[in-house]
Amino acid sequence: EALAGEAPVTFAEGEAVLGNFKGMGDWDEAVVVGVKPGGLYVLDYTDEGLIEEDVPASRIMRQGGAGAADVAEALAGEAPVTFAEGEAVLGNFKGMGDWDEAVVVGVKPGGLYVLDYTDEGLIEEDVPASRIMRQGGAGAADVAEALAGE
Image (cartoon, rainbow, N blue to C red):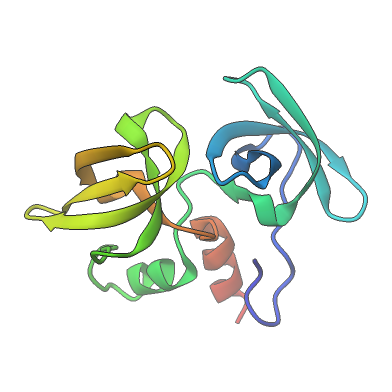
């Protein structure tokens, strides 16, 4: 989603992204293989062997995306991204590349978290912040570009 007064997020053919296949809530690694009129894209989910047509930008995010607030804090020299117990997030289960909806159910010392992947019925312990992102987060490059244009 674009910041106020900024152009909407766009993606280029050949770009590696995360796609929310059919809007089902699971964010999987994909490659943009087509750019269509009206801000729609064609994604190739290479690990799954699936192609999805007419995907809106709202169901695509850059890999390693962070929320705008997180990037703004980082640029200002603030503390690293942290998550709170009860927060709805996307987690990369066991670092396998699939970003699934989860809830932070525990905060542990050393910047580690306990995630509950409610749709899958799985709990994952000792998850580093690098494998967690806020839902609907914009990519860091998008936010940095928007802040540079102010």
